Length: 276
Image 1 (tube, rainbow, N blue to C red):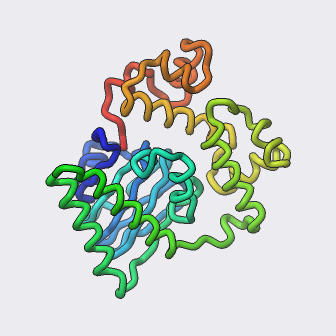
Image 2 (cartoon, rainbow, N blue to C red):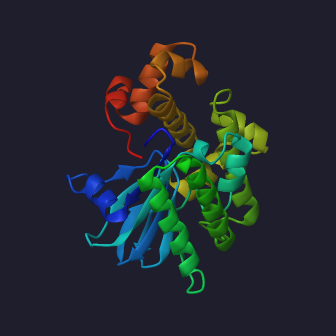
């Protein structure tokens, strides 16, 4: 991921780079916007199998695990970006990403209609050209194009009932994710979020497990690690600095927490290239 917090890559290159070396899965640290131009294949994202078809978009939330199920040649583009790339305002960022387009509990996939294909393809081609040529203020152009693309796709996406949940329960799940995003530094216990939502810890865990397969605690811990990786790779902060920023007084305690959750030592993670 470059200094602008965005990367645009050919889909076949993305598959080759991440899966051809015997790796069976990839956990994205960034938002992935995948445009399949031609061909078809399938992969598993979280607990769901998605089928990659021509003229389709697939949106993957950070932290979701991608596992290929078919080895087929497909053409397209992968846009990887950090939320900060969209805006310096967190409220504005999450207003853009709060649609049904990007969701922690399921990947969004949509087929592009015939009437919108030319317009969507033109946006993608313009972004590819700006990114490759890297001209003056190209990141400003890319930011504007990406924002418009997300808004356009967000208008077309729609989720009704999810995993058998009623609308009220879906709203509670969304509220939990938004509260975590806003209070990650100060609130780290499931009980604190359950209290804010006005429900029990048991109810919250049941809801989150239904839509993600994991507990609420798991989600909170994953978001802490993702934020630590973001500050590590993109801001160059030290372990001590990141621990302080995330509300940990003892950096050694945070180091142990990071290894337990991420499955890798902080120092080893810093030396490695981020999977984005």
